[in-house]
Image 1 (cartoon, rainbow, N blue to C red):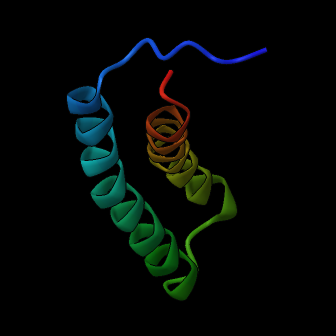
Image 2 (cartoon, helix red, strand yellow):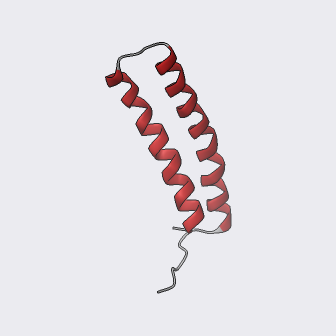
Amino acid sequence: MPRIPNIGPKERRRRALTSIPMMIVAVGLGAYMVLENWDPAFRLLVALPLWLSLLGLFQAKEKT
């Protein structure tokens, strides 16, 4: 069954452009936390911005 896009090219571009910097920040923060030996419970805080960035990229790719 073909997918029907519900976001236009402008919105897909916006989601992709906001997701990439968020992913860079999340990965950088996660690496910093590992290098500084933060408690693993605090490292889970990186999951939220990483998940949001991946969600935006997948939405842009799939046009949903």
